[in-house]
Amino acid sequence: MATAALALGDDALVLSHRLGEWAGHAPVLEEEVALANIALDLLGQARSLLSLVGDEDELAYLREERSFRNAQLVEQPNGDFARTIARQLYFSVHQHLLYGQLAAGDGPFAPLAGKAVKEVAYHRDHAEHWTLRLGDGTEESHARMQRALDDLWRYTGELFEPVEGLSVDRTALREGWLAAVTEVVERATLKLPDGPQTGAWTAGAGRQGIHTEPFGRMLAEMQHLHRSHPGASW
Amino acid sequence: MVTTSAPRETTSRESAGHESAPRGATRLEEELRALAGAVPDPELPVLTLAELGVLRGLHVTGPGRVEVELTPTYTGCPAVEAMSADIERVLHEHGQAEVSVRTVLSPAWSTDDITAEGRRKLQEFGIAPPRPTGPAGPVMVGLAIRCPHCGSTETTLISRFSSTACKALRRCEACREPFDHFKEL
Image (tube, rainbow over all chains, first blue to last red; front, side, top):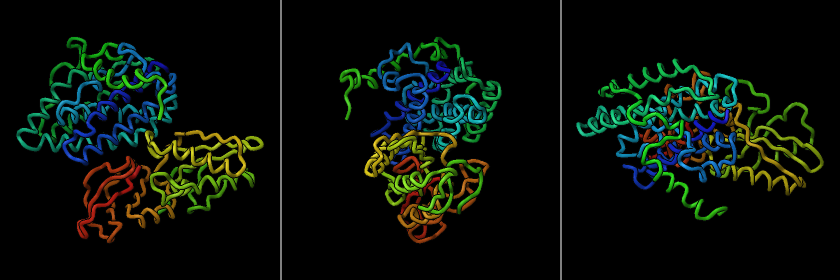
């Protein structure tokens, strides 16, 4: 159970931090607020999940890079708005289906999943609408959205790898995800990437603690206050 | 507006401020529950915690010792800590030395848990109340959302997220005023 809680908790924590980086930089005020709200939901999930494993603050602020078990997709830098939306689309569709399955079961994650699945439905809705607007928008937004989908595609396979202690129907998860993503991408006049979903270099080893280069810098920023002032509070 | 789906053991959907006590509650528990339930929501002070439907249970476990169960509206809702502190303070003031507030996630809170009185107050405060969610899922698009200022149903969505996670931002096409909508969950 601890392995699974850490994997799901780290996914939520890391993506929450990435989305928080948009604060002060989003293209319009409404998006600033939307991304911060999504980040807050994810942070709430992370707190619940990490608390199942140990002290949430220690786990978030005092672990080294190699101890994080998040999928590599969520640690990818925000890039332009299209890239953030592509990451949101891939992840929120996955998380919505995953939590839906967990909520329907009676495992240790059912209470949290039952709560969070309703919130994630809004994250997914947000990502799908933006994919449509950008894909079926201007030439420039279309090109950027396509590039973002292509660039992040190789990190999506990891979402369907088995995780110890996580009892889900992975085939249904994968098929449901592919059908949902394909539907939105095509409606947005975009093309579903056709490259491999994993395997290129180290893509897909986040659950084993192997992370991509930008993650170290993200952690440095996320952890430096806590490490510089141990026990500080306000 | 009050729906009757998914019966729950420890909460009541009776109208505001008159929550019927759970079976087996003592008079003291009823009294303390009313006090805790009357605490205003820190982000929407027009609503009490009872009207918001987040107070799940209150048990006296010994002399001067109380356990309270609170459920968050959203998993990451930062108001939960303020709610807990306020409940503790109120119960301390009423002679309870040891108050512990526990957060429970299941069954998940729904906007259907907001009482009829709570909905009326939201509307009065300028926030369009949530529509009933029904069993099919959280996002229902069929019913129009009425402008809380002029009552027109000609309103459009500006953003799915507003000043807090629980609200969406809309604009009224009739009176042109933007307003918050407590979105369905």
